[in-house]
Image 1 (cartoon, rainbow, N blue to C red):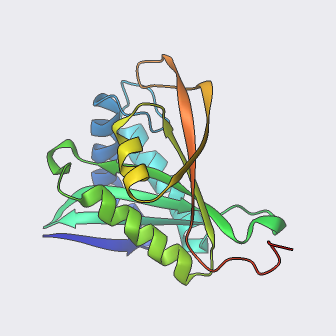
Image 2 (cartoon, rainbow, N blue to C red):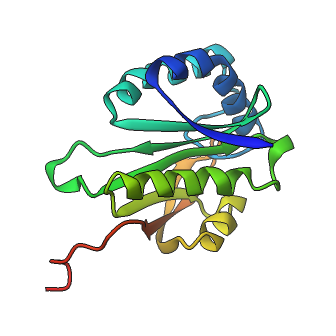
Length: 180
């Protein structure tokens, strides 16, 4: 059974090597999550450890899906530091091990982020993904709304420029001033 847990900054450091393996596996599988192949596992672990400080301050949140003792997936929530952006956050780095895909792990991670964001008083989430990727099917079926694509936005792991599609989802109470 898969368990979804939020991790603290120190816990993120503890999980950094496992998360690095997941990140490397994801990039090697061709998923566009911000890194180019080949991705060195040590560099990936360093990237995760560098997130620990922002997790500890609450600017960044990370959840992991555990399947027994193994990390099966992860997702992040990044909060902007801008004064006018306290109502929103960005969903980032949704990754699921290929061997765990098709079992609801990605959906469970996404739902955990949505519930947590709403409980924190956030009302809007945004994310982006490579246009045409399997992730788009998940986001649409989970009630996310496509708001546009930008051609040649990011490089895929092989270095080819690909379009990116942006999505949003309202998760908390609506702003009473919005309709005025």
